[in-house]
Image 1 (cartoon, rainbow, N blue to C red):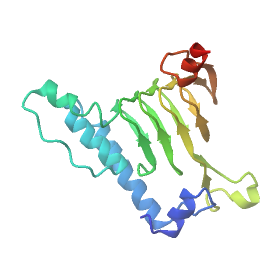
Image 2 (spheres, helix red, strand yellow; image 1 turned 180 degrees about the vertical axis):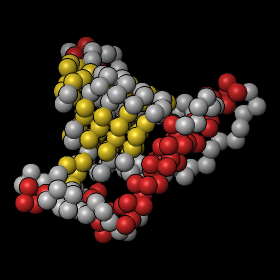
Image 3 (cartoon, helix red, strand yellow; image 1 turned 120 degrees about the vertical axis):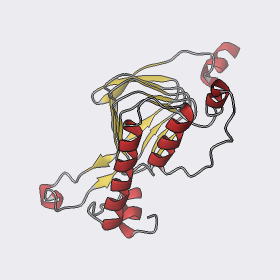
Image 4 (tube, one colour; image 1 turned 90 degrees about the vertical axis):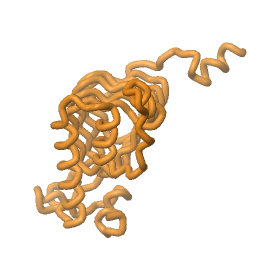
Length: 203
């Protein structure tokens, strides 16, 4: 997949051909993984993590099963996010989420380019992340016949994304509250965890 010419162009934010066979095969793989995740019903944290990792192509081995179900669940607190179904992700392989983050239901991610979410990030429901773009010029865009492009999205640690926010290409700095359509920074979160807050107290 990574060796595909169109895949590399897509990751680089260049114009690429979305109907490339390798890209379409991975999108179908990711769709099937999302369907399995969404239809799993009430399952253990271990099984939910396993299904999540199938979406994002994470091949790490799961830790050995702990005989106590509560302790077994805790094994994943420092390795994986909490993700509520349903979820829809375009490619999966370009979507990276840090530990301790919570992705609420009805999340939609177009991870044409790299989309990263830091640690301890909270998502409200119905959040959309759009890393995909199209040429503005219709002569280049040509409906479904022309090329597509993308831009990276980076959400730093300890961010709160309000419900129904639409995140476009760019970055969300740490310790901020973001909401709206398109999303915008509402305010900085005052917290002792913020290194800049520590500097102000020391002055």
